Image 1 (cartoon, rainbow, N blue to C red):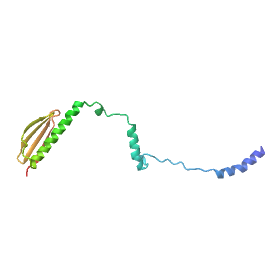
Image 2: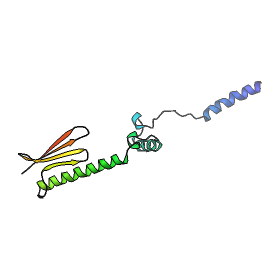
Image 3: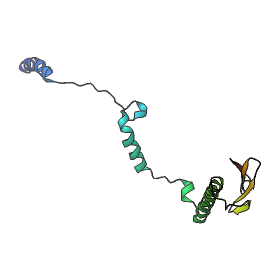
Image 4: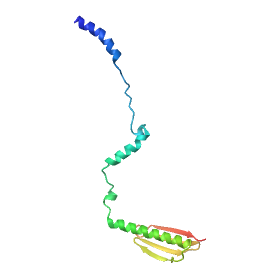
Length: 134
């Protein structure tokens, strides 16, 4: 027993000299909490890849509603192009009232230029656009 004690007494100090320790320091990965900013894109793409939820507005869309919205956008875009053409050169646009899907568009000649009134029949909201003449 005495030999074991003496052996431990001499070996233990030698073992302490060979042992190594390291500091354990927490470093966050998320840039929102102090992590490296280069991790942002990787974390975002990982989160989007794991996202299994669908937007309810996109899941329950009716194709006919999408078609009507697309058609309304195209007609209003063409109307805007014709107003610009009228203002800057083309003279084949006429005043009047037009029904375009859910919209009623009134085009008239105002005192200072062309006045376009767009009324949404679903909501009752209206927009007035005045295009001044030179």
